[in-house]
Each structure stands twice: as structure tokens, then as C-alpha cells.
Amino acid sequence: GFAKDGHPVYSAPTGALPTDLDACNGRVGPTDEFPEGVYHYVAAPDEAPNMPGCLMGESVQNTLSYE
Image (cartoon, rainbow, N blue to C red; front, side, top):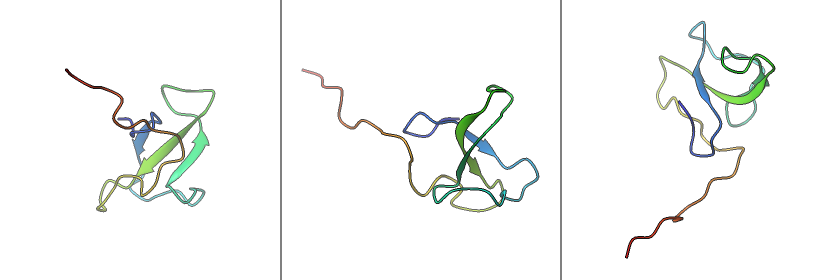
């Protein structure tokens, strides 16, 4: 999946979070979809909440309006 700021979110491959994550549980590294490396968040599959506690990228709020 993707976080609100557009960065991908992956589950920790071994069930344990890697030790090199930043304050938002993210890091730059290769993934299956981005073999050259990309910033991505890592979610713990067996801990809640398992989404990033903060966002490193920018997100837009209230960009759509309907009249």
C-alpha cells in the first residue's frame, strides 16, 4: 500500500522491524517494485498500530471540492 504522502508501505519481511528505520519507521532501500531503491515505510505485521506514526513526504489536504 501507500501512505498519504505517496511513499510505499511494506510489511517487515521477517516479522521484526529492521533496526535502521528513521523516526517515521521508514528507510531508503531496494524493494521488489523499486530495485534501485526508494524511501518506504516498514509496518510491523504483528503490532498495532502498524502504520507510520509520522510522514516524511508532503501530503495535500482538501484539494477537491464539489459544487
